[in-house]
Image (cartoon, helix red, strand yellow):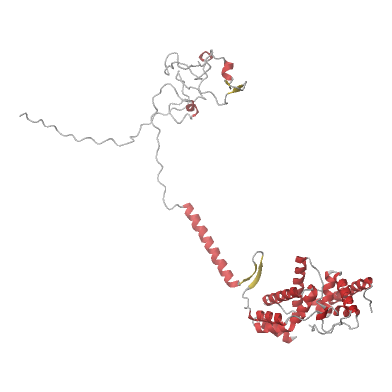
Length: 179
Length: 243
């Protein structure tokens, strides 16, 4: 944590320090954006926009107990929301299944993924955001609270409701059997 | 902040298993390297980023912006001060207005145009204030002149006010006929079209000198408009002796 604070302080005037922050968080930001938008080219554009905005605004970034990654996720969430607002396109389309490392190529697996994808699309934007931050970005509830600007208890409540809605969607379709 | 590779959830969670099944492919290495190179080589923005409404994000430096704004405001105030001072005191004094005096009234020909009645009484010394003039008695009803009638000189015996110059040639005008505008017959229309509403021409021939009620200004002495020609040099004629 102290190392990251030092890097952030150095990155205000040193581009090499900013490069180290980039190496640390690039994959996480890219995966988060890619799962939210479902398009590889669009994910690259939005990821580049996230880092450019972070580079410009790092002068104003203040370390007040909020991790640097939470700040990046917040920038990414704002850009994704702006993109969805402009394009009126809310989608959660994963990449090709054959690109998933270690993924099974069975028909049942593909069918299950399709059902999950469709059920995920039917959720509200807030439910998709909190589920994506939890299960795709791998953030803990306190970290999600830093990103969303709410309390950890509120994150727990939102996660619980989002899971319930996703489960109802999947069990209602009778295509995915809950274990 | 946790690493994205660490699962923050229970692996036995079915939702986690479902969502984890939608793992995406890693980013392209060339994209990652190119973006990193761009981030590292991008110059450090100097100033405060400001999102302008039309031109987008601009970087504003505080000190140069304050200095430029101060200088610009001082220049604008100086310009306004100089401009207001220039309005109060013109650089070149205006020339004195030329005194225009009315010329001598032309000799009266006994006939004036009706426009003369509209002149104010104080413009020319010989104009009578008609508003204050007494009303003539009924016996002195204006006589209508016809074409070719001789107009008596003002002040002569029998001269009266003449109101209309070109009356209808039928007979003496009745008062009602004078009031109604003369009609004009339009060929082919079958109807009579009234004349334009312009008042009839009035010959403002004043026979009897009406009493002047307004102040009558004495005619001012005329100023010589041009210097008199120089006298010709007188050359004495010396008679030549006869041969």
